Structure formats: C-alpha cells, structure tokens
Image 1 (tube, one colour):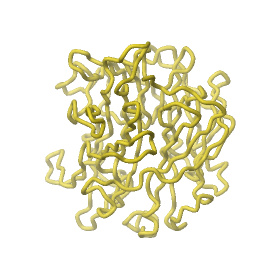
Image 2: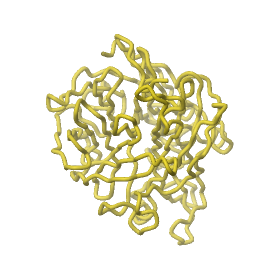
Image 3: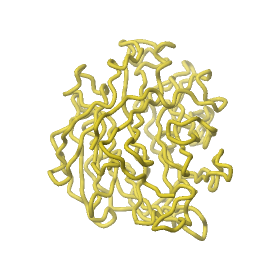
Image 4: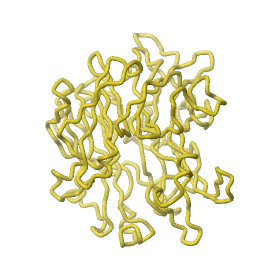
Length: 440
C-alpha cells in the first residue's frame, strides 16, 4: 500500500553528450530506466528540441551509481538524429527522429531460482524511428498532420539495439548494433512480421517477463489502423541476443499505447483509445484481461473512470497493486488536460474499477516557473522497476507547450519556459518494504 507520494524534483535536466546539450537547444524528453547490475542503474531517454511538436531527436543511455537517482557515472548516445535524412530518395531533407525508448533485460550478476542467469547482462533498447519534415524557410517542424501522410507511413518503424554493461561497470557496450526490429523469419522480406500490417509504432512502457526465468519477454506495440498486438521476445543462447519470435492477434477498436502486466494467473492490458485523443473532454481507458495474449482477442472493457485525453501508462507496482497513471481534466482543479498528473489503483476483479486517486505532480503547487501563456504538460509517467525496499520511483516529463514557432499557440517560447523542462521524479513510499525485481 502507498503511504505517501513525495515529489523529488528534476532527475534528467541536461544531456552531457556533445551536440545534445542545452547549448544546442535540447533537453531530455521521453525517458525510461532499469537496473543493470546490483549497483548500477541505466536511464534511457531521447533528447528533444523546440522546432515543432514532438521534436524528439537522439537516443541516450545514462549510467548511475547505487540508484536511479544516484550520481551519473557516464553517458552515451545509442543513435543520433540528423537533419539531412532523405529516406524516400525524394531530394527533400528530413529529421531522423527517435521517440519513446524502452528497455528490458536481466541485470548483470542476477540469480534466478538460486542460479546465475546465463542471459544476464544483456539489455534490449528499442524506440520509434520516423522522418519529420523541416520547413527550410523557417527552420520550424510542421505538425505531422500538416505534412505528407506518406512520409510517416513509409518511414515509421521500431528500431532496436542490444547492449551490455562492461567489466568495470562504468560504460555500456554494443552487442547488437542499431537496426530495424523484425520478427524472426522476416529479416529481409518486404513484410517485417507475420501480421497483416504495414507499419508498427512503439508503446511507452517496458516489456515484462513472459516466463519465470525471464528468457522471454512481452509487450504490446501498435500498428496501422489503430490496432495493438502482443510481441514476444526470446533469448537465443546460440546467438547471445534476444529475438522477436511471435506476434499475437491484432486487437482492433482504435487502440494505441498499450501496457501489459502479469496479474494473478492472467495478463491485463491497458490502452489509450484514439477517439479520446480527439475528444475535447477525453474518453475512457480501454482494459482487457486474457489467459494468453498470443491465443485470443480479449473483450475490451471501458470503465467510466478516469477520463483522459492524455498519454497513459499502467504498472503492477512493488506492492502488487495495478495502477494507472494519466491526467483527467474533469478532476483537475485547473480544468487542465495535462496538469496535475494522477495515479489510480485499478481492480481487475471489479470491472477495472479505479479508486484511491492520488496526485503525483502538480506544477502550480511545485512552482514550476513556466509562463502560463506558454502552457505546460505533465505526462509520460513510468514506474521504474523496483530495486527493493519501501520506496519505488516514478519518472515523468514536464515541458512547455510553446515552441520556437509562435504559430503553434500564439506565443513564442523563451529561456524562462525552457529552463524547467525535463524529467522529474517522485517516490512511492510504501507502508512496508518489498523485495526488488531481481536477486543477486
């Protein structure tokens, strides 16, 4: 049970990698994290600019000592964004953008069932890659809806790389270099998997173990026509890497951004409804429950609470409670669709009823000095895998709505609005201590 939620401040404020710093008008955008050894923790995030909406750029890893909020040991770039990419050979230069990184793997030195895990110290990082157009006359990035839809349809995919922690535990090393993620057996085919789809996009939450020894993992990505499906990853001991080995049935209903978790003897899935994104006052969260995400299309349940227009994520936390994190303008004291950021306890046995709503972050109470006219978003929350004890961390994004282009909301961003942007975090304080996800 959560005893309290304590706001801890900013966790990721600036990238140290040359070309990705605030001096280059970039800041940490989408973020995630995981434990990579007993004493090392890796944050993974994209850098982000202000040239347009979702100006997400390079993918960065950051190694920390002792905890997710411990001292930074080192930092490196997994894949670099460029501004002169011509993926369709049209002579039009685009930004090679990268969004929403997630990661999974068994930490170095971990033991499973009392034995050293042979697949430990191998970590998969994956993210969305797509092309974004830059207006050469203004230097601004038009909204995706204002550009050729073929640009997204023909360039969006999920890329991945596989890394390991080096022997000194002070750097991450490449095991499998960056490439387009394809299902095994479709490495060079026109189709990239056995589902009837044209393109795939990335979800926000990390894959979770699919079996007891964590040699297999599962998550839910989404595909064209707003459908989601389970993806299973398996460790190939001969090759020493993870492979995408199975795709579940496509679940229709205008769903995106799925999260999946083991709950008792079943799997629970949450997803954002595309209609809620477009509705002025939002819409319900889609929930599903299934014995096997690769065998059946589950019934979709739409509980009345909460109601959101915003990104949403769900997690089974260290205390075993399923929780949903998003915004709800109907209960916001400001009538704001992305402020404050809330979490709810969810009961799958009672129709996914939501209760015990709590505030994770309220920018006004925290005194975030972004001008009101520049707007604000508090979103993209991730509960980080538990490392043991009575405290579990949740990281989330804080950013202004305004960008360099004043056309977006009628005001141009300034240095005051940019300075607070980054990833903040909070601590879930439980009433008792719980073991970490991994044993050493």
